[in-house]
Amino acid sequence: MRDEEHIRLTLALYSRYNDYKDEEAWTLLYAPDAVVVARAGQAWHGRNAIRAFMRDINTRQGDRDTCHFSGNVVIAIAGDTAKLDADMLFHERATVDGAWRNSQFNRYTADLVRSHSGWLFSRWMIQPRASVVSRSVEMAAAAPLPGIGEINKTLPCTPISCTTTTPRTGASCSRRMLGSRWRAARSPAARPSRTRSRRCGRRIRSAGSSTFAPRPWCARTR
Image (cartoon, rainbow, N blue to C red; front, side, top):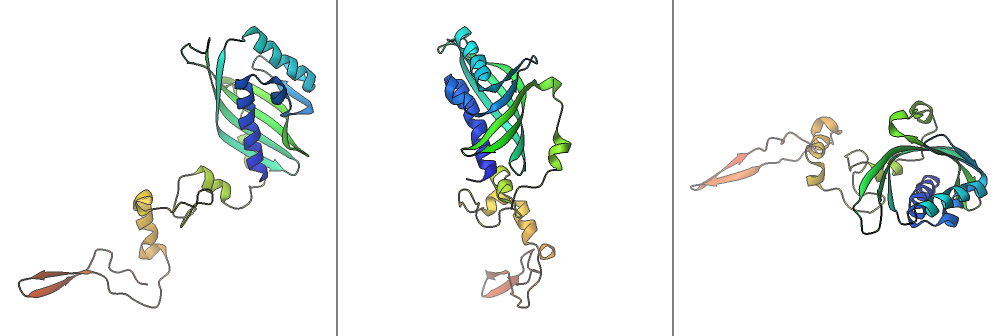
C-alpha cells in the first residue's frame, strides 16, 4: 500500500472507530507520545490520556449515535513524517432511533509519523471551521506525490490525466464522459499531424447520383 493510501486509511479508521465507540482501536491510531488538541484548546498527551478522553465522551453520551464525514483531504509527505488537512462534517442523533442533525463543521489538522505498522497520528488538532488557520502554502511547497495516480483517483476523467483507462478501476473513459473536451483534444491543433492523410466524409445519394459531403472536421489528418 502506498504511503498516501495508508494515510487516507488511517483517517477513515479515525472516523469509523470513533463512531463505533471503539476506544482501544481508536487510541492505537496515535503514536505513543501523540497529542490531541480539541476544539476548545484542551490538550491530551500520550495514549493513556487520549484513551481517557474518548472514554469520558462515550460514558457521558453513551446513547448518542455519531457519523463523521471527512473530505477535501490534502496530504504532504516528507520522508517518515507527513501532514494532513481535511474538512469534517459531524452528524449526530441523541438516540439510535432519533433524527440526524448536522452538529459541527470542523477542520482536522494532523501530523503523522511512519511506524512499523504504518502511519500514526503524532499530533491531532480539531478546529472550528470559522477559526481555521490554513497551512495551504506550507503544504503546497512539499514534494509532490509520485506520478499522477493520486490525481487520477481524485479528479474527474480528463483527456490529459485519463486517456484510456483509469488506474483504480480500469474503466475506459468514454467520449460521452469527456464531451467537448475529448473533441478538443482530438482536433488537428491539439495533436501532431501524421504523414498519411485520410479522406473523411459521407456520401449523399439522390436520384441516380451521389455527392461527397465533407464533414466539418474533415481537415484532420492521420
